[in-house]
Amino acid sequence: MDDERRRGSEAVDDDGCADAEDGLRARVGALVRDVAGFPEPGVTFKDITPVLMDARAFTDAVAWLGAPFAGRATKVAAIEARGFILGAPVAYALGVGLVPVRKMGKLPAATVAEAYTLEYGTATLEMHVDAIEPGDRVLVVDDVIATGGTALATAALVRRAGAEVLGLSALLEIAALGGRAQLSGLELRVLLTV
Image (cartoon, rainbow, N blue to C red):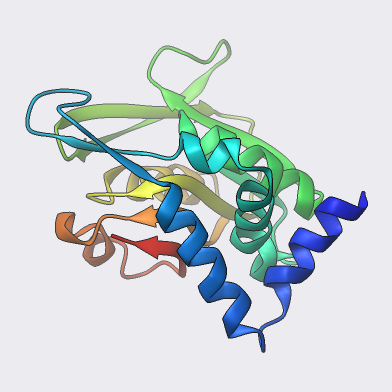
């Protein structure tokens, strides 16, 4: 592990260091921007790309998302599309495999599907039928918890494969949309609630 990644992990892995965690929340909160009317009128999109462009904020956030699952997770299920951006480095940091959970029709091999509702419509998620094995312990990673639909659908896919859902790590939660209530059975790790 290079020195910069190690420093980022140490800054947020120490459970006794609430100041570092509060500092990370403040940095990430200052970087997330609102984009009104995207992806459709009436929706305010939480844009995390400024977080991704800030090397320290990105590194520290990735370390924070995965830290409690080190030594426990055997796979990371990352939800399309921005969940891939966070899930891949979390899986790398944990030394486990990455399972892409994609919109219907985007995976090349045989899949299993789950429909869900989101804040501005409905959709279906899929994963490869051989991506997760019975007995796997899976961390679900996404960028934002909104209505909870994508996380709930992903957890259903993981459980259908005979695996355990360890929890859900997300960068942001939009509290007004009530997703946490739908996810009451999951261990949630959310860096910033807006």
